[in-house]
Length: 191
Image (tube, rainbow, N blue to C red; front, side, top):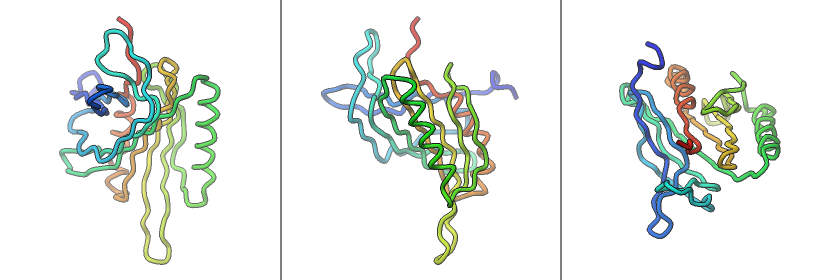
């Protein structure tokens, strides 16, 4: 089945404030059977300026934690989106490289894949790794994929992180995670 033939549901990672209105972290186009449930924690420290014609504002600094669920297999994964404000693209790229170096150089990390990744007209950085934990009281390995995306239209650096200790299920679903990342919407397109 081609990407064009698949059915997608659009989800918004957002929070509503009685005075400030709707604060959007990002929009996700999730292929069926994926869903977002249980926003467990969200913080918004700064919003971008209003854009005429929009009923929401982009979160400029903040994070949101939620669960990404495969409704067919009934398996949930932790999804965290952290957002930072960077006016200059080169500053954002330097931050991305610094974070990637930390991941890759960690002695507890087994790197599986690291590459450039196209998302919504942007070139993002994608990394997939196994984080090894616990030697004394048993293994507690965690499989992780992360996407670092700088959106120059909103001056935001988005860092998506999907993780789980269920390494086998994660390995089966990793292609879906890449497809989900391709469906990220980080800025409003002008008509």
